[in-house]
Length: 106
Image 1 (tube, helix red, strand yellow):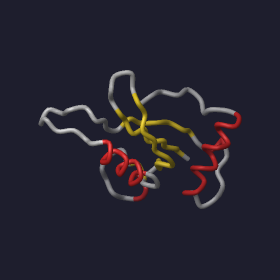
Image 2 (cartoon, rainbow, N blue to C red):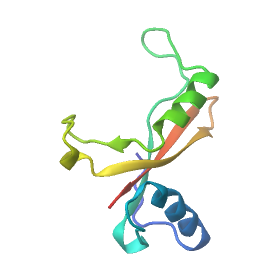
Image 3 (spheres, helix red, strand yellow):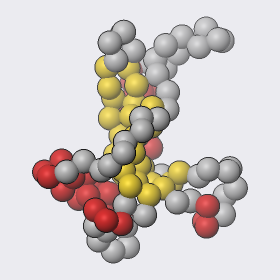
Image 4 (cartoon, rainbow, N blue to C red):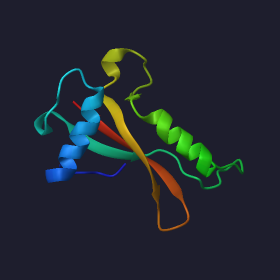
């Protein structure tokens, strides 16, 4: 996870707030959220000799949006404090594709 010391500003922040507010009960403001991103998986070959295809990563990207994040694997709603409001595939310097999940805390 990349450590962001502060939320983005200006037009970028407005676009992200619009994206995340699709999943909120009321409109949240910049002062009420902390935005962060997570690189969850990639298309490199793993220890079992398997990898995600580009098609699989595209499907995962679509499935992640709107899901909640948990921190202790307890399915109670009180522990779900973050939500994935967007996902994108990112090309790293090496030939690796990573879905980047964009979360917010409120």
